[in-house]
Image 1 (tube, rainbow, N blue to C red):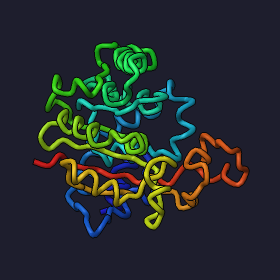
Image 2 (tube, helix red, strand yellow):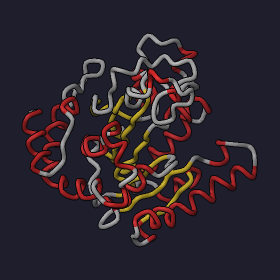
Image 3 (tube, one colour):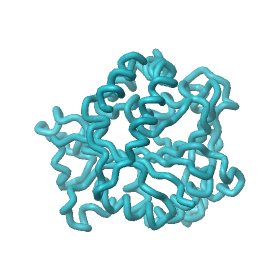
Image 4 (cartoon, rainbow, N blue to C red):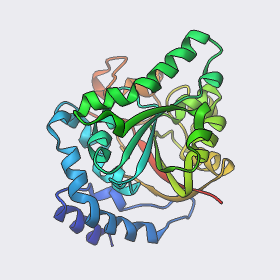
Length: 291
C-alpha cells in the first residue's frame, strides 16, 4: 500500500517522504481504511495541493517545507480544497498562506482564536484577540491576493454561531500552549462543537520522550507526550483515526533545558550543535469527532 500511495503522489507532482505512511501504529491502533483513502485523496487533489505549495508567494516559506512536510501532512489529514477548514492559533501565517491558496477557490479558511474570556482576565488582551480574529480575513487576502470573503476569523467563545459547519480543524504546534495555559479542555471542546458529525481534527505537536517527566512534558517546554495527547483527546470526545511519522525527527533529543525553542528555526540559545538538526521531533495525529 505504501508503494501505491507514493506512486500516486509522484503522479500528482508531490514527493512524499518515505516515512510518511510507514508507521501509523499508536498503542496498537491503525486504520487501514484511512491509508487507502489517502491514496484516493492524492489521486483527486494532488495537483491542487501541489499548485498551492509551489505558489510564488510561498517563496520564503518553502525553505521550511523539508521539515514541516505540508503536502504529506495535509494529505494525511484529508484536507480537500472544497472544505471549510479551521486553523487554530494561526500565528505567523506559515500555514495560513498555503491554506489560503489551497482553499481560496471552492473552500473556506477560518482562523480560530482562543476564547478571550478564558484566555486572559485582562480586557485589553481580550480585545486584541478579538481584533486578530476580525482581521484574519484581510490578512490572508493580503498574503494571497484572493478575495477576503473566502477567509474569516472566529474566537472560540462564538463557536455556537458556526456549530457543526467545519469539515476539518488543524492544530499545528499549538497544543502545548493551551495545555500550559490550562485552557486545553475548553478550547478543544469548542472545536468539537464546530465540527460536523464525522469531522476530523489534525494535530501536529512537538513530541516529548515517552519517559519524560511531567515537569518537562506538561507543555511549558513546548514538548508533550504523544500518548498524553491521545488520552486527552479521547476524554474530550474524539477517537484516534491514525498517527503518522511524517514530521518525526529522531535527531531531536527533546531534552533541551530551555525547551523546544532551542531547536531551529528559533535557535533561542544559539547552540551550534543544534543548527543542522532540522526542526523538532513531532507527532502527527488525526482524530474523528466521536458520536
